[in-house]
Structures are given as C-alpha cells and as structure tokens.
Length: 610
Image 1 (tube, rainbow, N blue to C red):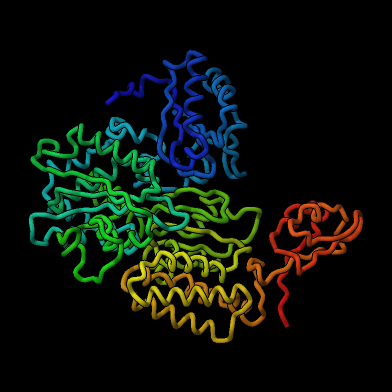
Image 2 (cartoon, rainbow, N blue to C red):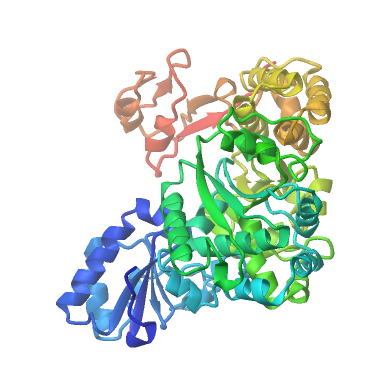
C-alpha cells in the first residue's frame, strides 16, 4: 500500500469533500485542478491536497477547507481554482467571494466552526468527518483509530466489554432503540460455537443518507466497532449488508477491509491475541423491507428478502440458523469511542434514557440541508432554526417528519419537543434511522401521508395480509381525497384500518407504516376535513382541487404566460387582460413561474365547492 507523506511536512492542507453529493458535483475534478495549479505555482512541497468523506454541509458542495486556517470554501468550480491558489495559498489572502456567505449572526469571514451549521453539533460517530482520507488507514490510526480495539483485545474480557457497553446506555440507532449491550449479551449467552454479527447498512428511507456517509467517510470506525463486538460475543465471521446503490461506500469499505487485514487488525490472530475475525461485504438489491432484521438475514442467505415471524429472534436463530447479532452502521461506529473514552463519558451526553448523539439527514424545506450529529435531547427548534437556518424565503414552518417513511409528522406547536426515543414515540412518531424532512406552509399534509404510505405500500413484501391489503386500502382512500372524491366516514375508516395494520402486521414495516396517516390525522385533521367536506386543498397542492387564474387588476397584458403555456389555455391580446381556459389548463404551473414579478398576476386558488 502506498504510504503518504507525514502531515507535518506540509504548510497547508486542502481538504476536498469527496462524499457522494460533492462527487456528483465534480469534486474529483476540483481536486485534480487544485493539484495542477499548486504544481504550476511550485507549491507542491508546501501544500497537500486530501480527499475526505462527507463534510455534512451537503448543499454547499463541492467544498474545500483550508487547514489549519479553517477557511470554508463552497460551491467550487474549476474556473475558481487559479484565483484561489494565487490569492490564498500563494499570497495568504483568503478569497471572501468563494467562501460560505454567513448569516448576520456569523463572523464576517467565518472559519468552519464559526458557521452556525457546524457550531451547534456534537460529533462522536462523525468524529473524523472531513478530516481524513477514508482510503488511507494511516490517517485513521493517526486520529487514535484502532486504539479501542487494542484496549478491548488486550486489556478487557468479553464480559467486561459487554458490561461497558451496557453501562454506556447505547441503544440501537437503526430504529427500535433496543439496548445494544443487552442485545450483545443475549447473543453471547446462546449455546453453539458458530455465531455471526451483521452490520445493517440497508438504508432505504427517502431523503436519508446517514449510513452511506459514515461508510464513505470513516469505514474503519465501523470495522473497529464490529471487531470489538465480535470479541465480546465470541464471533469469528461478520457481514456488512449494503445496498448496491451505494457504490462509493462499497468501494471504500472494501479498501478499508483490505487495509485492516494487511495491518493485522482483521483476519487471523488479530494483534497477536489469537482472536480471528473476518468481515464480508454483501450488496443488497435495494428492497426497503430488507432493513428489517429477518428479511436482511434471508437476503444474505440468498433467499427472497421477506420477514419471518419472531420469536425465535435472530440472537437465538439467525443467519443459517445460528445465533446472530445485528446492529446498524451508526451503532457500530459508536463502540470504539465508548471503549476508548469509557461508559461514564458516553452516558454523560444526552438524556436519562437516550444517551449519546444521533445523526440526522436534514432535508426538505430548510435553508441548510445536510448531515448533522446532535446530542440526544436537543429540540426540534434548535435543529431547524439554529443548525438548519430556518425555512427558505421566510415562509412558515409547518411540520417535520422524523423516522423515515414510517415515521410521523410533528407540528409547529411541538417545535420545542426534545429529540429522544420516548418523546418521539409519545408524539406518534419515532427516531427511526434518522431521516428528518422539514415541511413549510406550502405542504399539503394529506398529500404527504399519501406519498409516504404509497412508498411503504410499494415496498411491502406482501407476505402478511394486514400490511399487503391494509396499506393498499389506505393509499386508495387518501388518493381519492387528493382528487376531490373524499367521502364522509373516510377519516374514521382510515383511523380504524391504520390501527389494525399497526397491531397485526408481521414486521416493523407494516407495524409503523400507518404513522404518517395517524399523526397527520392527529395534528392536521382540519386539512382532511377541508379535502372531504369542501373539496378544497388549503395548501394549494392537490392538482384536482386547484385552479390557476389571472387577476384582471394586475395583468399587464405582456403575453409571456400565453407564449409559454404548453396547452394553449391562455388567451388575450398584447397590453390587454389575459384569461385561462380552465377546460384546457393542465395545471402545470408554468404560467405562475414565468409571470413577471412586476405584475404577479397569475394566482393559484382552491375555491370551496358549494
């Protein structure tokens, strides 16, 4: 393996974000151009260029951070590189116009940790975010990597490792929140010489990219955590199950596994302790239901990924009928920090029942989209307004969905709700794997429930009737509402069938699928009633319940809307009032987009049907 120059040999480091988001925006081209320009200026002996994993502030990519200056450059383009190298790297003058533009609360020329998005976070799982090359094991070791493994293998018994994880209060970060140490102990106590551990990296929630980012940015943290877990449970074979839609994560994980084995940190006789452990990568085909433990096990075995009845639980009878422990990516990545810094340190973070931190993918109608890690117990308001920067265009916050498509929608009046397992469950939602989708005033909650329920219905394996048929009937009922065909009794029907599906489905997919319906009915019942009784969409979203009209008091007769209408539904002469033929209108919305701001004459309305 190629050895890198020591970091202290360079005056400056340019850290180029190479997470999937930045790579899609040509981050590798940025890196190559930086190296070329640095060479032209004869600065190669002074300045190193390093590709890192995801920095978290995804919507600002491609990102380049200059260290140790801490200067954060955003949305970089190849044409910007010569100016950046000349001014900042050669002359020592940071280029303000290429930096992240701060809010009034931030420093005029902010360093990375001055930026609101970063300063409110607490990093444990993402401790190495954006500071090391994920394809270089030496850099991971340089940041105390594999130190916890050495402690666990040479100074702790398996029982002591489990005791420490139990004392930390770590709970599974994949959704259910089951105590990790207890889970390990149950598997360890099962009789039999052959046992397995699995890392569940099957992340299928819309808008979620937590596991992918950890695997891309810091794969060795997951490998180290799994190896410690294997020692605690007395396991010699592990699997990382990753969906094939994550090619960069798979590539970096395989590189990391090869490097760990080369360094004697994986494979036979790890660190000379006579402990053997191997990890194999298995790529899933992208079925959402394979995030459920028993379906995932079936997929690894080469079968159709369908859940089975429990008990027996995987800790009793899992992969190929052997005791199996499954934790997700985020859970495994926590383990090295617990072992190296101690259970007392970890348990001091968070709340009484929810310890440590949680990663969320913050997406939707929010100014700062990206990946954030925050202590348990932080409020929704702090995430959305302090870290997320609030709602674009000054619009009103309406709701946030947590827990992925099977999670619930939390309304505005619960913005100060602390984020922990119990609080979210009490509100009708759940922690889930960490998806957080923000919605503004222009969001129709009936349509949101329909969208997410349609997703889970399509992803249902179809094995059990409650999920297969119940979700289908709920989708059909919601679809009728959004088309203005809602009927009296629909709300009661939805509540009844949702509760039945929740109580009688075989696996977690069906048991949680009704959450979007139940929470939107609980907090936004008036919108359902408007769709049913008035055939009106208050948010002006449902196409069958809205119309586009031209305000005759504002129309200047510029003809722009008529020229751009694809269905020829707009008529009118130049400098005279235009009208829209509702029979021809396809409600594409182009007219409202192209209408000049000085007129702002096209309006979207949803009049109540008498």
